[in-house]
Length: 110
Length: 514
Image (cartoon, rainbow over all chains, first blue to last red; front, side, top):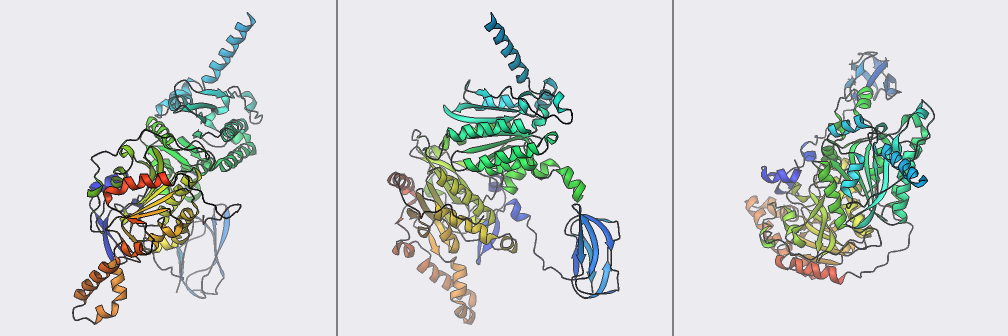
């Protein structure tokens, strides 16, 4: 129902602004916000759902920074995904031809 | 004899077109809980006032066997009528005719009525119910959309433009409503999106229903694309009439002056706001204790509910209200609420509607999500909109105005004409707790009983700065008033500022942060 109409009857929550706690209601958007996490440079996630066309790296192999890791097709574009930092590949979680959703951990570095 | 024959011929032709997409299509339309395009128009305008044009327009498509198809009126009805006895221009897409799809002649009919509306300085009401571009007409239908968007932009700020979404409105088609001033949606009937569920599924593998993707509730509560939500089409049409009772007909007109009615007795202005600034209340109760007949008409009720915007009347004249809402998120400013208020302020300014701002906020909403969503540039919209507006601007600080929030909410420094404050208002850089922690950090930390010292210092800060008199001493506040005096002073302020004239530096246009 309407946020503030139904809110009137619901239980009050509290929000801290500059050290003061105010009694109030939350909006749906505020309740559903996700907690921020520091990006991990060693982990590469799919940024969009798509298909893995080619995998050029494998676990245990030494790779250079900026080396082509895989080709990932999404929105009719063949995107090239590169190795984020020099080092050893820890794990590759996808195979060629695999459909991946958004946000899947594709591979990680040691 | 010949004349009679001719009239019969005309009547026959009219009857054919009035049948729209035929009985079956109409039955389907009704089964979905929808009115037909013609019924919608008839229910909206004053009785018997609608005059239709381009009834006999035919499409020119030749490819894909289209030359063998008759599309009555090419799927759209255009015309003029009156609402509250004043002229309006209307178009309504007819979903029963080829799914209300937009081809070249369909769009030409729409742009014709848009040109009338602008030329004759009357509101434009567009009722959208269309499957989108008519694919068979190729780039011609894209051209049609472009011509509509261009006219929406040209008319913006000259005549009120109202979009009513009573069916699907997908792809490029959604941009016409987005360019207009007010978007009306009806539960379970309105659907708006750029790419629909099917495309999302094939391309992205994500499954979502039309309703969850772009239904009336989503646009009313989450995206902010819609301004008015209703349970039924009839309610939507009533909301449009109510809105039109408040707003001026064009940017040189003034809104109608209504009979003055006092606020209802049940709203007691002195009993709504708790003294403790941490306790919530519904700012709409305050509004209803001030405006004529306690009739506050809220815009974008469900989206960014921490800011309340809408129309009310004072002494029979329309006023736009912008208020922090302590009931939701303590009334903070954030990305959405700044965006919401800024656009409304610009609407009021464009159409000569005075703005009254009610202030009660603890500041900006803290959070990584807010910072990364660009609260800096969105928050700047509010500063821009208030600074730019030249209509009468009246501000009342109800209980607290801290930090950047104090500046942003139509402060004296952004050219407010009158700034009032209730006697309990705290105007300071931040709340006393936060301020005491910073100013007296050393004393608090070094005290034998830090908590006792903190409380002492908070009290000290409060008594010195948490009141309206420091700001009043500088002239930032014009008058500290009793709650019961509010309506009287607002009426007076509106009256004395009715001939307000100020010049802004000459420019083609500014560059607001959008």
